Image 1 (cartoon, rainbow, N blue to C red):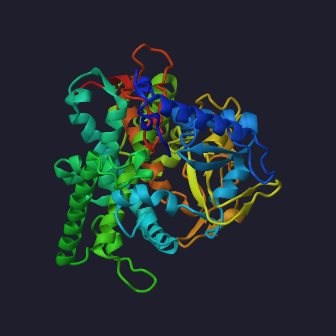
Image 2 (cartoon, rainbow, N blue to C red):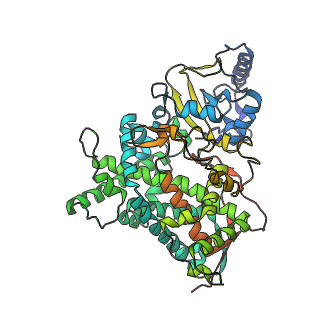
Image 3 (cartoon, one colour):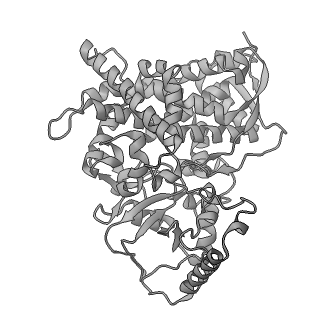
Length: 534
C-alpha cells in the first residue's frame, strides 16, 4: 500500500514557505534539529535500526512514496533485512526476505492484525461485516464460501465467458477501430481496465451484473473505486468529494445486488443447468452457526469480488501487454504455441482457424503461463503488506523485539527482484521459468499446507515468489486470476500483433500513486490485426 507524495501539498508549491511567519520557521527548524539529534542518540539493541529522516512526523514519506521498491532496496543495503522507517508518525518496521515473509505473513493472530490496518480503507468501499470489518474467524468462513464458488466446473465455464467478453470488446471498442480498422494505437492501460471489469463481472457474478456495467454500474464502479485513496487509511471519514461519491455509490451498488438476490429468491433456487455464478453460490451458503448469509453481506461480498477481481487483473494484464509490445518475439512465440498445441494450421489465416479456448487449453500453453508468472514477478501489483503488532515479538536469531507501537511490513516483491533467487532479476524473461517449472521449484511443499478455516492452502512463505501473498490472507482468487489473465492474453495474441510506438523495447515506469502498482498513463502501443477484417 502507498502514501503518495501528493499528501504533501507544500512540496513544489513555489513561494509558499516564504509566507510562513518567522517564529513558525524557527519552531520548524528547532523541531527538525531535535529530530535529527534524537536519531543519533544510542538505541536499545532490541530496536531495529532507524532509517534517517529530516522532518518529524512526515519521516520518510517522500522517498518511500516516490518508489517503495527502490526505497526498500536502499535501506536493505545500508541496514540489512530489518529496519524501521517513519511514515506520517507511524513506526513501520520492515522485515525483508523469505524469513521476513514467514515472520509477518504467518504471524499468530494474537501477535499481528491486518484488520486494524486495512479496515478504515476497505470498509467504506466493500461494506460492513465482510473482509476486514469482521472477526478473522468470520472472514475465514467467507473465504471458504468464495472458494466453494471457484470449483473446477465454474472455472471451466469461465474461460468461454472471458473469451467472449474480450472478443466483443475488440469488435466494438473505438480504440480497436470498432472491429473495422486494420491497424491503430491504443492506451493499453485503459483498455485492460475496461476488459477486466467486464470479464470479472461476467465470469464471477453473472449475466445480470454484467448487463448493468453498460448502464448504472459503470459510473458507480468509478465512484466507488475513488474511495481507494491512501488518505483514507487515516481519514476515511474526511468530508471530501470523492468520499461522498464513494458512499453514495456503495449504497446504490448494494441496492442493485440485493435486488438481484431478492428477485432470484422469489423465482426459486436455480436448476443445475444454470450458470454457477457466485451469487447463486452465496445464496446456498450458511455460517457454522446455521445462519444463512444475509442479503446485505452477500451484496458486500459481491462488491468486494468485483473490486478485487478487477484491480489486480487490470494492472497485471496491462503490464503483460506492454511487455509483449516491447518483446514482439515473445508475442510471436505465444501465437505459434497456440497454433502448434491447439490446432488451426499454419497458413496466413491460422488465427481465425484457432478453436475457441477451453479451460484445459491453459495447461497446453506453458509459455503463456510463464509470461503471466514472469510479469507477476517483475510487476507485482502489491509492493507492501502490513500488519499491526499486538504483542512484543522477538525476531528469531536476532536481539530485536518488535513492539506494539509498530506496524510490521513485508514486501515479497523484494525477493521477486533478488538476484539470489532470480539471476538477472530485473530483466523480464518468461523463459527463466522453463527450467524452474520443470523442476517444480515453484511448487509448495506438502509440509507447508495448513487450514486457516477455508480449506487446505499453502503457507507459501518458503518460496521467494509470492504474487498472491501468503498465510491466512493469501488471495482466495488466485486460480481465477491465472485463468482470467491467461484467457485475456491468449485471445489478444491470437487476434493482434503488438509493438511499441518507436519499435524499441520500452515499458513505462511504475505509477505508485494508488494502492496498486500500475503502469504510468497513458501507455500507448501499436496494434495490427493478424487476419483481414471481415
